[in-house]
Image 1 (cartoon, rainbow, N blue to C red):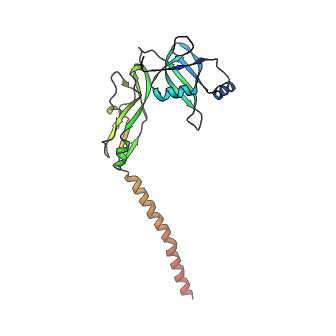
Image 2 (cartoon, one colour):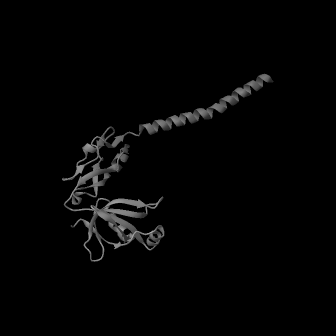
Length: 220
């Protein structure tokens, strides 16, 4: 299983909030793994070890969770909770898998060519960040790439337009819009309207002042 990432874990009992806080203060990350037809298992992993593994394998990777000399658990990440207001990990939920049984995963969309669009003065409007795919765990890629480098205003990409690796099926509705390319006209028009309104507002007091002076002259 060359594409798997190994993590050393320590099985633990479900603890109180205070116990979880102490665990995190010692550099460990609380985790759990749920398995089909079995109860979930709580464990901890060194936070730095998990961060390094996650940077390599991401959400769609396969993780071998090794607890001592026991047979490792083969798993994928199902959910990551973060500390509110930060990107720091709070808790990770794994799902036990079989390499010979299909499962589902949310695969990140990598947009290639953003800089080319920006250089051409175009605007990229992205509606989706991932696709919900079904297939064997070993077939999931780290990300699905969409090339927008040659796209022009008016072009768009729907789920049905995306080419997937062999063996994978997309469960997201095929007619959903992923992204589109446009001229940033609306933003320019709104700016011009705001400038004209500001100019009119600035001119109004001056006109009012001239009228007041004229009235004062007549009174004299």
